[in-house]
Image (cartoon, rainbow, N blue to C red):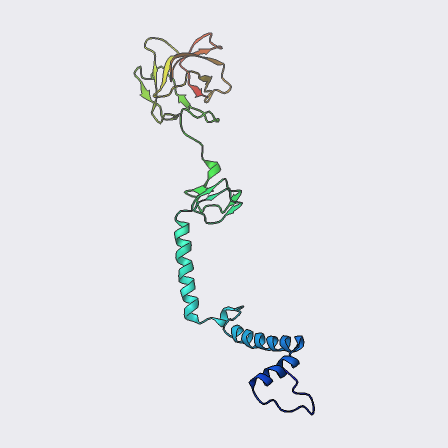
Length: 234
């Protein structure tokens, strides 16, 4: 603020010009600085009173909080409809996770019908991962039908029946047909049955995809025999 007055013993100013002269003589840098500081302090306090620092949700009206939560929820829902997770390190409940390093295991991923995934193999004729393409047990005998008959103990990768017949008029010679099977290689061995060990030798000749001619030779009797045999299609 401005300080000072007319010097001691000086006559009182008579008009406005003399007052201004007195003020000019007593105007100093310190007086001006003090006055400006006072003015800024007063105006700054009034400005600060109109602004608040919020550091807790307790300072907000509950209605304001509910409004913010509703707005945020709408924004996230809109984003979730178009966003996928690509290259994520972890994906807990992501709709689409590409190349995720780890993700929560789906409830039915490890079992199907309470049978673990390791209990299943692919049943098809094109897979090259190890499953056999077919097998059959042929209960050969002199009374075996000479027309193709479906075998009870057999498997075919095509899902179709396995049929066999005794070649008409020939002892120990049979034809086995795996319907719809594209394979051309098969292995055969004698079914010893109750006469273990068996002295029979089984020969196999391919007749086309899924079709084989089989001959059973009895080494003990040195001749063909109508003895049972097993056929495997790898």
